[in-house]
Image 1 (spheres, rainbow, N blue to C red):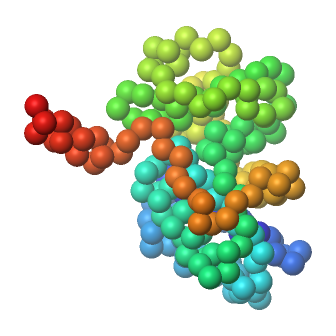
Image 2 (cartoon, rainbow, N blue to C red):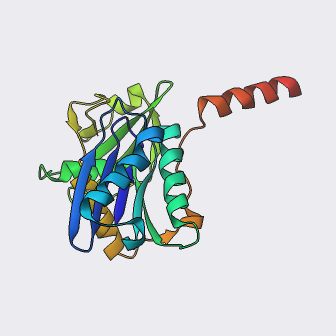
Image 3 (cartoon, one colour):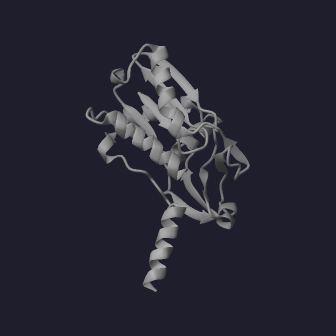
Length: 212
């Protein structure tokens, strides 16, 4: 399996093929578009493997950086072009919950992601890191009024409890979802956006302005 996360500033890559494993957290200053494929090729080369040796993929589909998500999904679709290997789609909330689970939570908790423009994306999980609500959008005031602990990315610092998911977290979650049969074809892989990008919002505003 090759698993990647590009929804945040720090990209994660996990490779585990034929009993060989390599993990990498890309520095947040690196551009995903310029370094993701290079690093995957380098990791495979160091393991003495090629992309043809891999039998499945996993990728974070959102929410998070619009550009980062598109880059990750496009790369996986490119890998699967003509070979149609199974893909495990993973939500950013699930990776946060998986990372937090290592601290052995004793109660339900929310995972929160900064949606920018004063909005936040949240989803509730039980102590076993299983989702118990649908993802939702809330304001800062609504976020502060949530009745259980809130977990967020350390790089975003939007709650008292923060975590930094690792490539090992990503790989473990991907393998668990794969074991549960939660795989799709790459042609059905789509981003999970909870808000429109600023460019899309601006375009809609212009269209609505012309209609009025």
